[in-house]
Amino acid sequence: MAAVSPSVDPSATPLRPAQVRARWRRQVSRVAGYTALAVAAAGILLPFVWMVISSLKENNQVFTVPLQWIPDPFVWQNYLDIWAKSDMTTWIKNTLVLSVGVTFLQVLTGSFAAYGFSKMRFPGRDALFLLYVATIAVPWQAYMIPQFVMLSNVGLSNTLWSILALQTFSAFGVFLMKQYYESIPESLSEAARIDGMSEYGIWRRIILPLSTPAIASLTLLTFVNTWNDYLGPLIYLRSPDLWTLQLGLQTFVGQYNAEHALIMAGSVISVLPIAVIFLFGQKFFVQGIATAGVKG
Image (cartoon, rainbow, N blue to C red; front, side, top):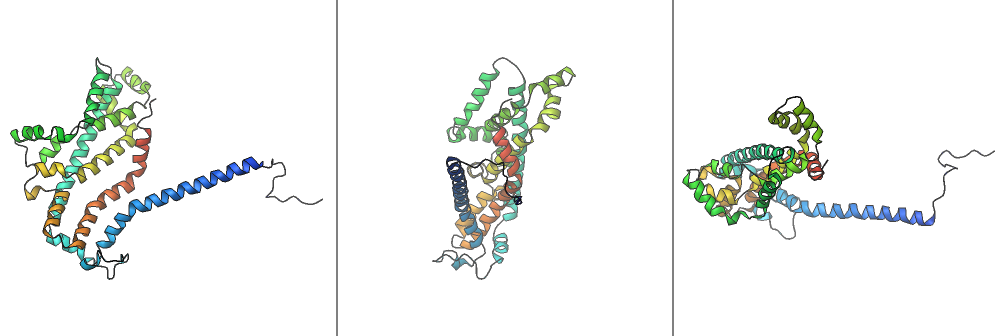
């Protein structure tokens, strides 16, 4: 009696031609999808790669035709020169102070307000929440002049406190955190109240530890927006020792508009922290955005 090959299952039902064609179409669709995503990712990353490469070239090699993808030679001195010719340390310090401060305040106020809108009951709660979230649709340009007058009258203009005061509260942050809080079972809060825990204790000891993905998403978005903000610092920060990285680089471009390699080096320095943060926080970011709209 002939031995049956172990790689073949005699009891397996042969696939019908329609099933074979369907499986083949799924595989082709999957390959096409991955190929399209790879092409899109390459297109998105290409400007960043070109910027990094240009920052390592000599000045007269940045815009050569055809494009030179490998610098010859590698000019690492550009990163030292940009530091020597500009006040990069002050710019980064101010930007870091504002980014960390605004991020902390928005996460604190957003998560605290979202707890009230999602886990507490009071008259007019839903109407107040809709009214607050509706402010997202109002462009900042519509009220930035009255806002500037108010902050100037209280003496906050031309200080870092002006940016912190402007961005302490975020309707988007409240919306994001509330949507995530809705996915946390209400039974946890009710059990804590029965045990005598205060609302503040429930928020701090139960809700916050369960909201890591949403907090990480809000942290990333707020940090990136504050780091890249240009218009706010342009309006409120007039002293050179208060300039952020975006303001400083714009001034540097005006002074050294022919130093293309140095400008690229400064741009890489401004983008690198954001790229690193997204690289290490993308897991929590995707998870938080994906689950923010899920209600339990």
